[in-house]
Length: 463
Image (cartoon, rainbow, N blue to C red; front, top):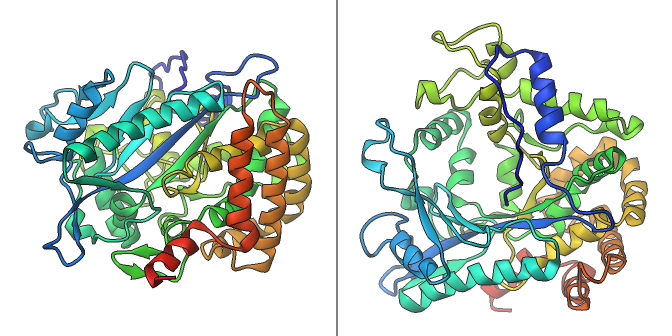
């Protein structure tokens, strides 16, 4: 999802003041907003796993190469995309990329949607920002139809899970050999095994929403989105299996992220903001989070991985090999921060496992019902603010889905509140069938203390 931001960064020596200004002007200020009376724009980024049916394989499936000859996924995907105006966009020629100059970076469509690609070969469907839920559904459906066309024309299939349930990281491999991804892989490998699993074996559904025109609404939405993280993780858990093994978690994808790199992931500390609801507290919190995060990748240094004490704050006064960051470097650093609620001039909500086919709209409906209705947003904060000091503990418990009595009870209340909030939104933004989707989800899953993960495990056991 792309929101236009016309602000220009000027090269100048990096200072704390410049960092704070970047957060305030580029991340906290809305890059695009709805008209008065409209709830807000909404977009999604859905990641799917490609695979090939292979009856000769022990698993009955095998990974499909993203790039390569006519048997590659990219060849089939470009061909299918062309029928609805999709245009392949290539990486800019770069002497450091040599053999990869012709690799496709993305496929862009006339309606503003894009196909993007992750290192494990995952395809990301990134929709344009949409004014209504019907429009969002149409955008998503048209891109899923392209994947269906690939399946009809080849032996390539697509699956939606929070973790790849079949293939080991060594079977998949890093398929995007840009210096940025090589540096990320090395960086995470130095910390532990979870980084490579995250890059190659996870799939998510990001929901992108407006920050809002009013400063108070922005702060409330950001605060509420952070407090919702444990419950969203549990409600929409869909990653109980990886590499053919049951993990014991319902959202193993969330478990991976929680054990990845605490200095650039997780839930932002909300204690101070929850007491004051002041903009300066929010901006300072996000700035300090960025300053204390290690630097993962500097294009001027290629694949080089820096020691973990080389944070943004440290490098301001300790240049590396003659490299001193300026304001233009900030955008790259912030793009390598992965909090559960990421500010990008809009809200990028990152806690949902990729849901099963047919359920993709439900998490977006849920979030819109809670964050786009001011009345229900206030009710939501009333429910969750008392839990602020315990959100970290609840987040860890959420990887087990609705096993916690407290998470289960509150999750039921939250889905009820989301249904009421969504129903209150203007009729030109939503339709009754969207509300019905959330109600159906509640009756089939949350009310019965089940998640998508539970349903998948039942399928594996033959129930």
